[in-house]
Length: 328
View 1: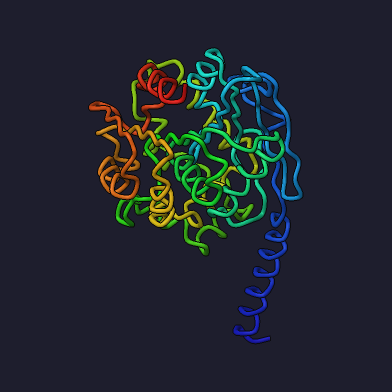
View 2 (view 1 turned 90 degrees about the vertical axis):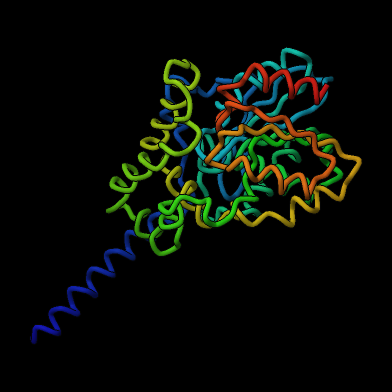
């Protein structure tokens, strides 16, 4: 056998092994359901339940006043529903009927083998509302959740009463996305990073990447932020599908291509919209609020002079008060 033949034989075997491993991950990956973090137990919020679908299981919690105004809260790219602990409990305590849930691949929700695009997330919200029997509701979204809330409102306008957007994604320019985010979101790079042989290295890299997203923007003396950071770090290690969902979202979701959806929402002039944004936000840049205002002219925008992307936590008293006042 010649050297060339040996070389191609080795390459063929390597590819076969790689593809063999790859087929093992072309399925829904489970959440950390069986091994949750201490800071985020299954009963973190009251009245939890599961929405079981062919693509996987979504965890949700429905609590508060059964006869109160309905509101669904949609979280961002990394944290899971734990980020809404202050706001969700405040709204429930003040008489709202609150629905929170974990997006696909976060917290107690599985990670389906799918494109993590606008369709996947918008459909998850629609199916969840169908499950709980809500035909209309107020909608709150932060960061990625704000983009999802906007898309949902554009496609299901009759189901959305009031809309609250907290530093929503979808209007950024391509140059606003960190270079590493563009690289790891590329389909070829993603498939390599998700391979079982490479995954441990990928997790370390993603751990460093998350240093630029909201979980790190305020003082570590904030005990709630410390708790959220611990949950995110636990999720990196113990949620078998988080890496898939995170990388998939960076690659598949239109983080800077939702202009048409914002324009569609803006055409419904009678719908009240509240926007909250930190002037020091560099994750979803504050400058995007100007374009949002052009699309949704009826939007009321509250600016936080010293706020970053984490105002949901770092400015929680002001945010909670503003959202409650707007929704009541």
